[in-house]
Length: 193
Image 1 (cartoon, rainbow, N blue to C red):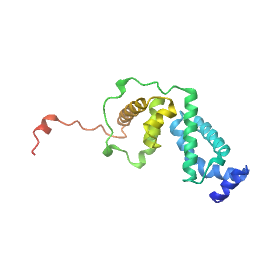
Image 2: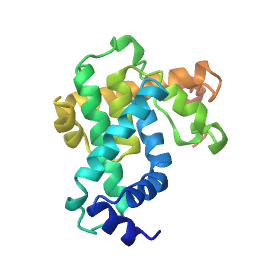
Image 3: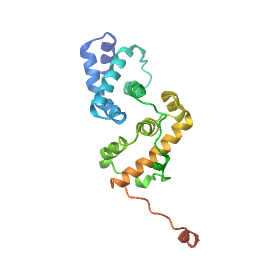
Image 4: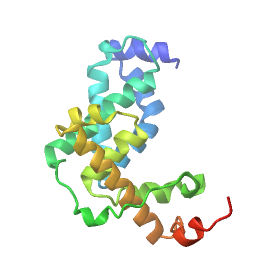
């Protein structure tokens, strides 16, 4: 079924069109939900709630941009709303976890390790995990994240910085990436110019 037929059918509450739309987009949207959820069951609940909203708001889709992007935005907002009902995002993990390490591009794991990285992201505290997902993966600005989560923009920035540091710590501990080599100030100062 084409996207146009699915849309037309969904607008008429046609069950087969809704099923086709769900079957086409739910696997990718489950992946989105899984990054925000604590477990698969929670992710599936978020997905179901997200698609209920998709179907009830279908009349608002204006064919501006990709349908998948529109659905993804609804699903992300649904995940955030579910999390907001259950937790506070201003909760922060002790600063001791933010050791000042920075993830460098040469440390980014290969595609083969993507599942391990997602699992490590899911080990982050809720606030860190949510801000990291929204900023680094979904592409929202810190201002948008602050508005979505009812936190200050600066809180979003600090949560993101701490999330990166904690994620790097976890990735190193699980031997997914190697600890960056410390630069010797003596060698740097005496290096030939």
